[in-house]
Length: 621
Image (cartoon, rainbow, N blue to C red; front, side, top):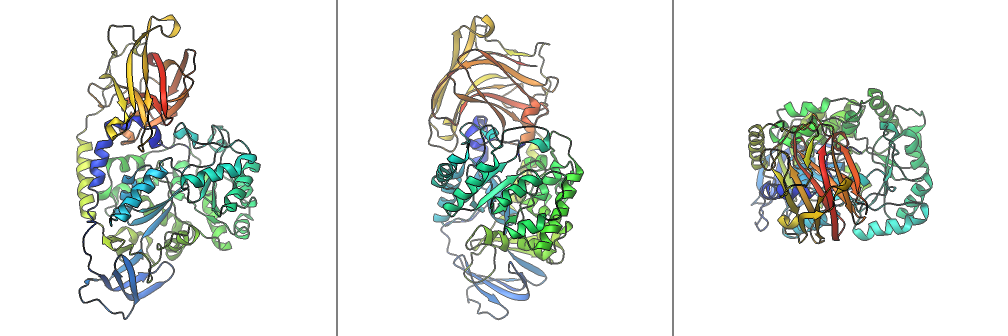
């Protein structure tokens, strides 16, 4: 979806002030010792949903991280830890088939809710995430969900996806399709994700690829034996993509439309569908996701950002009829026998990692699937469609990724939330530690300072850089922000230089070098409007942030870090032309109200190399 209050890690300079917090907390999320000698685990006399069917009573044995036996009568190793499964149900680890992962903390969070694998649908952080997962697996650890991804998506210049930072690759025509797909393959893409969305559903027009380009990309993906999955916004977009041979729809369509032949068309084309009802509800202005914040089985594990995100909405009036159209479409798909996959589109507004998949299962059942069909949509079906070897089934030879729950989710789908234990690769996940951390984070957030309204004049001036020192009219002032905090080598410097915008005598020069080599690469300056560093300020009396800039013609980023965004900033790109030009970004364009701003960054990110930027007359309007 377009309106994600986050940006690619490649465009996250504001993280210089909180990455350490994330890393320290992530390091302690789950306690699984990489070098420990594991005893076999036996779950005895338990109801088993094996990914396809229900076994009323069985015993499951896990040895060396793999399932070695399943049945009523199996040999129990003499040194095994035996768990009584009476009154409980054992499920394969759940799979969320539509998320957007930007850091490993989100993979850890998924796991603690029993989501042992995720299918990412677009990230610019593919290599770093894969390297992290490989290191975990080679070290014998298992504290993150399994991750598969297309990496960068296929989109037009200025199209959906490019809002997440400079350096996002784009495609202009069908003649570029094979080269484009091959470049994604070289980056490590597991499949190809295509964007076909002109913004018309939301009343916010934007470029998109042509049907000819889309068809060429699908053909190029198949030429390299890659699945082609598409974000298609309207019913017509979906049908065009299906007729072009796409393998799967990453969403059901977002508009109020109906075609009695839609289900049969999807079946005829042998495609699959990931409805993503969780995010479609939010798009439609339906705010039911907040029930997770009061669910006694879910809410204790939610952190402040999870709660904020579940309560958030999109900055436009939704249409309830759009969601009802998607529900009707699911009935068509079920009747036609189309494979359905469960996906949430986390972390969009109204969603969060892990917890939202349990809500998605409920919505699938409400829309017409049986509980067993919904469980298949989160286990064996995504395993088959995305070739997730070792996942999604309980049978000998599969990975020991399991979720034990109280009750019977094959009859009451909400029983998936009543988690007793989770195993990843045969190792028990330490949910108790995560529970304690979530509690402490909520307590810390409750004690956090509330946003103050700064004293600034009617002009809204922050800095005109005409004084003797680099200062601001209010707030904690300006400072350098680079990736050196994260071990990066990027550098930045700021100083006064003669000549400014609109004939002023001075301006602020921001120069430096962005050096690749870490997952996050950035360099620039940041203004903090609160009374102390990273304290929130209420700027909502104004509508936008404005500044003048001139530079070397490269792309730069303006980011806002806000309390309501958790630890992830929202951003807008701009190109610093060789001539002075005014840039104005509304708070609404960042999907913010402006009432809890903690930092405003201006600088380089993503593109490597030297940069030279001048800024002047920074103000609120």
